[in-house]
Image 1 (cartoon, rainbow, N blue to C red):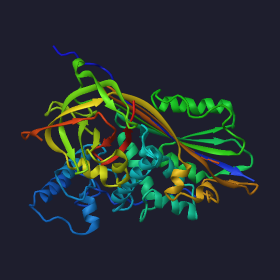
Image 2 (image 1 turned 135 degrees about the horizontal axis):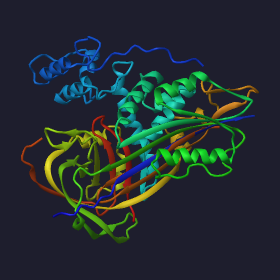
Image 3 (image 1 turned 30 degrees about the horizontal axis):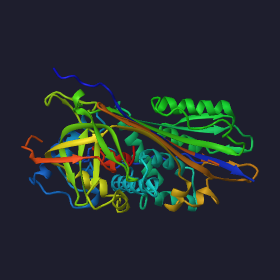
Image 4 (image 1 turned 45 degrees about the horizontal axis):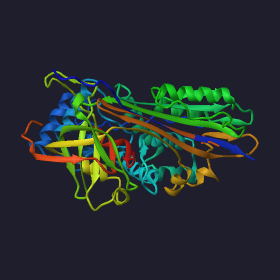
Length: 486
């Protein structure tokens, strides 16, 4: 009888934006172009799924105009397939499987924007290279998206450009993230939470429209507190609770200065078991060759996976996590998330591979997956990271928010002081072992198939590599990191 090792895979992140002050209007109702509503009857039904399935098999002609295609291609992969029909069917029975938006084209451009932002912020967190890295683009993106609701003029334009807005408005991003947050928080694997800590000050008037918007679209908790060490404890308690205890502290004693206006917080936590867990004897010692040229003996997990990936510059595999939804006919859990391991080819350094990454790199690599028996060897690991993101974000185009900012949609100084972002902080943690992954992140903005498998492959992660915790349903990374050293 096989003995299973019962542990979890966890990852968490916190993103915080700090707004300070130095010497609104609520969002209007939005008319939704309902994605998945092919027959335009105002709801997504099994009839819509059947029509989409007929389009995918060529029985009827696919729509040619962009609006009609956007209603049909609900997974946003550029093609109308059986997967779109499946998502519509799940939506029709109440599973909230489709992310809606006020702009029919926005689900694609916002999703592409998330992927572009993910690649760019990851590359900047990796920096000069050689260090273990972990970033949750979703966490940072969400915190900055909330901030965008309080920005005006050039400050808002820079934020929208950086977040991949392009033709999208703040309302489009709000709507997309509202649907995404609502969907993922229905499960128990990936969770996200938002909050706004408003400092009690007589000289600052917060914009009620901003507060209403982030409560409605981001389900943000609102706290009105003085800038003192008791509030530090409350912030850290919120972080601890919403990262499932994986990140205990974000703020330190004495860090809440008198010029602080508010803190925008986002927390993301991921806690999942592997779809196929490792056996006790799959854990063996091996040698990892560090980025700096040294070698070290550490614990490796040996297994066999079914999904092999390759893009000509790197090879790797996808190891699925066990989902929340039980599929009785298939007698298995739905696999909505996957651990994507990316090993640059011999002759290509990890620095070189990361330098050429863009918004499509991960998505295209995941889409190369073939049903191939793959022997895998990867090390167990656990680490945490903290990033001050001001310079990274300036380099990405968010410039005026840190100085000559227009945050008049967030707050107003009664004495004429300028209100601007003083810091964006991102903190992450991950633990990967025999049973799965635990990961968490927090961001703070302070405003101051059953075919026979192909021939066997082998991937040994015994040198620096990239990993992604990937949302397979929405084609976007939740966490991206590197393992370079032990």
